[in-house]
Amino acid sequence: MRRIRTLSLFTFMFAISFFMITCKHEIPGYIDGGIPSQTSNCSPDSVYFANEIQPLIISNCATTGCHDANSHKEGVELTSYSKIRGHVNAFNGSNSKLYTVCIKTNKDRMPPAPMTPLAPAQLAKILKWINQGALNNQCTGGCDTTLFTYSGAVAPMMNTFCKGCHNPGSPGGGIDLSTYATIKAQAINGKLVGSIAHSTGFAAMPKGGNKLLDCQITQLKKWIQAGTQND
Image (tube, rainbow, N blue to C red; front, side, top):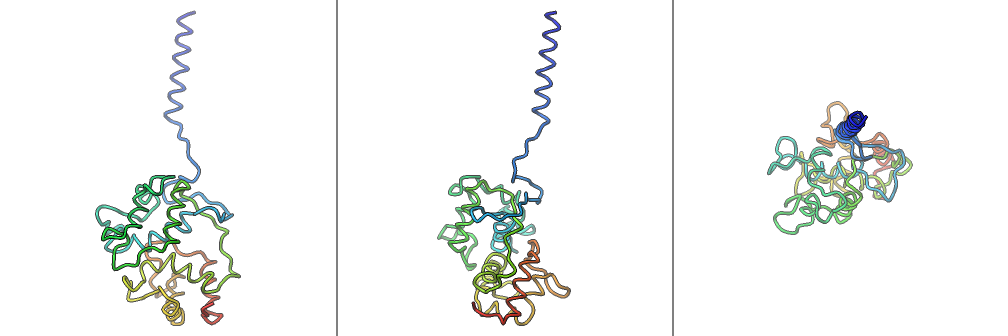
């Protein structure tokens, strides 16, 4: 009887150990492999990686000669969630390299001169995302096609997805998208929509990033159809 009990206890402990080793508990929002967890509602209190952080990093950091897949300067590549996450201490933005190198004021600042430094609002967004856990998340309900003003839709879109590669210090393809005048010029000649919509004959933009949402492309088209006003 004693031996049977000992064997039963051993069997039970082995089963528990096997279960603990083989069972993987997935934390919501930490899905890797490029597939973010999604929610239909965009909370104004949350920062979403796929919507805001990834395009910001792709545009300003994962560029040719810096941290794209081909260049990976200093061995650093910032083209996906898993690679970006490697330079982040979740819930501790002030001690995360992704953030600290962006707020430097010397030659070590990223993006480096002559590229334009990230704006305070962009830095705050990165810091908030990290402090919220650096989740691989995405929301799908935050775009409104009835909003298509320059200040409310177009400028924020350009700042997030395009300005990092197309500014006076780093005019990719000879194109600057950092001001109303330069954005308007590209909108009028058709290149802006052609590239963002991935139309045939145009260079697909954002380079190395995901195509903008249909809603965002519609916002841009509506702004152009309304006369490209500085509204």
